[in-house]
Length: 217
Image (cartoon, rainbow, N blue to C red):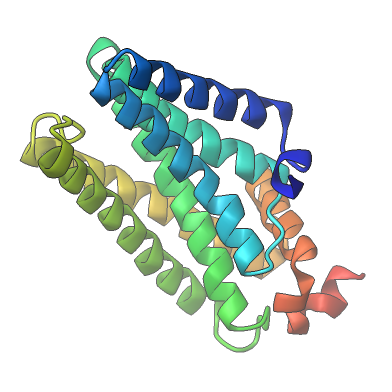
């Protein structure tokens, strides 16, 4: 109930639509649609559930973005074949997710240093961020491969070419995110992305103890 009360109407509508679609598909014995619907719902619930488990506060824009990503990537992409209907669908999703992975990686790396800007030079934190983001992107490709092999989906499309294109996009998005983190550390600003980084850090200031005094200024 706490999860529902603190969610955006957009998120609640998507969760309800996925649940209804899954139940209707089960009733009609459309197993593939049922699986895609319920798998999308499960994955979109994962970030807030993990955040609650680890006592993290997630900004509402982050929750909306992750829910929309899973909805677009799995439900619309697979159930309604958006990957084939719209040539740019896969590129847009992988590009945006790479940036999201990168910014998430930066927050995790910065958290390990407890928000201490002096613990490591910004260039080193940016480099670690890039590596973490690349790893997250690679794990998504492993997830696509596992879904295709285990459940007969077609998330990899053209196989190797699709995977390599996705990895290149992941690298570019990770580079952008690591540079954003670098600029943020150097000047405490990085435009709209920097504002979202600050919002997360403020909500979870206890994990960034050495950064608290600067946040209060």
